[in-house]
Image 1: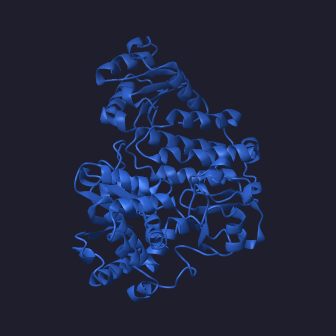
Image 2 (image 1 turned 90 degrees about the vertical axis):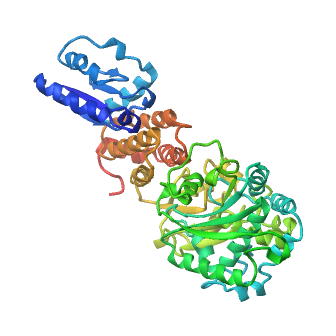
Image 3 (image 1 turned 30 degrees about the vertical axis):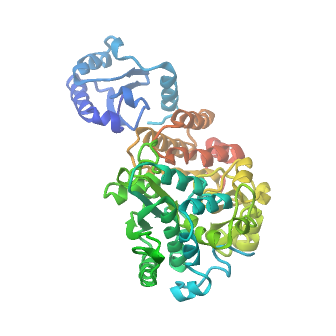
Length: 107
Length: 419
């Protein structure tokens, strides 16, 4: 698995539809034949007010306030397309904390 | 050592009304009802009584805030949820000295001007619940509660509420939710219960041990009470020791007694004659102390200065040869399981800490793994509705500081140094 797509499933993100987002993203990734991408849940990225949050690892891209309408672009990105800049709104200090945790193997 | 709550040691069985009366039981109530609630609050403030549920908040102040809150009616809640692992003090008081607790509750209700008191008691405490119910019947027949007590125009009614047995259910505002028939979820504060509490009305939530101290204060006066303990931590406190020591049980000691006296003279030292590796004076959420700190006085200020706390008096020992990584994993898993789940930050923190400790335990991640603990704790500091989010930090951070060798052993060999 070369890329993991982590979808936050803590309360706030869930309340904003992250379960459905994860299921939809799994479908689209499968439909596109992206066998090296795994879409899986994550406990929390600590950016609850900005949810639902999705983090691509080890690439380290963070997409916030994701809606179903954004998923085609995210799937394109996972397939090698461009970064979805408008969803990249999280401040760098939080990114650093979470990326370090992911680097240590916490997922 | 002379005690306030257990003047003749921990009593056997339930103290019946006659026995309680024979040692001046309910005389504090008769005395207090002859003067004003304000006088009663002043006595308790002058005595320096502080809450025994963990936070150590001045009881007189809590009562005053409740009494001065403009809304009516006001409520008293006796918090006997006692969900801290290893804590036995409230159960012993409820089971063996129910009248001392009830007299304290009636006095507290009089002080704040409440006509209704809820007795919130751990649902697993069958003996305590029966003991309180029996004592309530005796006290009612004796005319100590009900309407117009001693012709004072003061009325008080009691209702017993079985408390769910989980950690958060003992938190003040979670207690209020349960009494209102809802899930045991803490509320966001402020507002505090003293202004917006049960059913939105001013409420004083007091621990069982706190209220058990009230009648002796009223009976004997603030000066007498201050003969016990230290200037900032007046009176005594009940400490719970578990199977770590040769003589497990509850021990009432004046504040300021050295920790060594509790462990060695009361508890008879560590079971099996083992050496102490670490002491946790307020399990499971305080910092560990090294054995060199065994002479630290058991009072709020001394424990704070030593880098730990008193909590509700559950003192846990870690034996030499035990791996601290395994110990903090148990603590972290406890808080992860007990986090009620309503605050995302608390779920994130407790789950992440447990994952981190498991990685260390498995020897993964090296030094960078250890650096994550402080970052995760700092990120979540001050978040969450209740204090649970702040609880895993002191044990974990003190373990890292005091026993770096245990962590290194796991990270370099992947094996536990204790096995």
